[in-house]
Image (cartoon, rainbow, N blue to C red; front, side):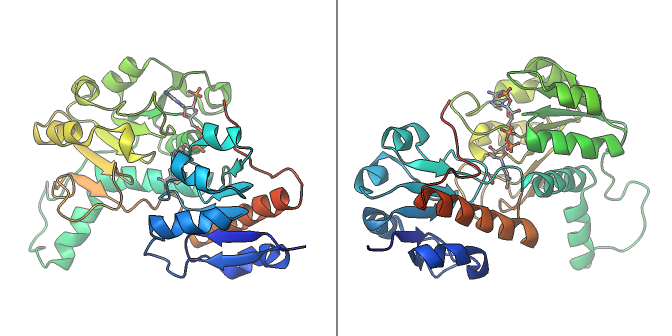
Length: 323
Ligand SMILES: NC(=O)C1=CN([C@@H]2O[C@H](COP(=O)(O)OP(=O)(O)OC[C@H]3O[C@@H](n4cnc5c(N)ncnc54)[C@H](OP(=O)(O)O)[C@@H]3O)[C@@H](O)[C@H]2O)C=CC1
Ligand SMILES: O=CC(=O)O
């Protein structure tokens, strides 16, 4: 019997993939930073029983139609907006993601981004590096306090709740908005559910942690930024497309809001001449929410375990369910 063929779209640690090498012919794109070009991915998908994909790979109808042997897609991310889930399911292809194991790491980064933006940490570090520090000044590089302020979390799911837990250490008031109530966050963390409008109007920090869906696409736009306080800081660690970036840029230029911390962008990667990057009150990161060594290795291991399960006739640990 021929072994299944697995294609991995980015160089990953082989140690975490050991189980797959035992049951399959595994081919891996050799580069860590340069992505596998689309045409090569489509060619590999034509033969593949399993694909281990990155969030930057578009697993759309065109690709799925070519992938006549494909049984499983294991995406190295909790988000799966890069995959046409319904189409995959209709074709009997199992899609898996990496929830839970990245929750704390992503919450740490999101809170770090919030602190860095509020207290101007990147600007301040550059100030020293660029030899601009000449004296101490009463309001030199003064930012906004974080402690005892109000944080409004849009998307109080796993990462949102882990972020709220961190906010309790700073004695913040926690507001949140979801489509449904998160009673655990209310009971354990004292979070208060409110409408999106109330959250936007009353929060000092508005943090987006929803998945990207048709409902959340450009949820943050001109109208939302106009509702926010002029001292508010917007943090996005979800997906870039939940924001209308032009509207965000204008809100920052017009001082409708005070700053933004962004780990994600509509089109990634962005270049240094992206309009938002040039603003002093923007902290821009290259989508590193879950990027700790421990977490990224665990994510690769979970992808491998999911793929192993599907290819050996078992139920994977973290299958994406179509709603
Ligand atoms: N920057 C990075 O590197 C990372 C980014 N992410 C992003 O974070 C997202 C969240 O991850 P995770 O917390 O694990 O996911 P969860 O599914 O646990 O949480 C998502 C939350 O969003 C809420 N939500 C969904 N749709 C809407 C809506 N239309 N309006 C308001 N709230 C909504 C859900 O509640 P309800 O269904 O009740 O509305 C839920 O509480 C991922 O999908 C991914 O895009 C994740 C990891 C790393
Ligand atoms: O953005 C990262 C993810 O895991 O989703």
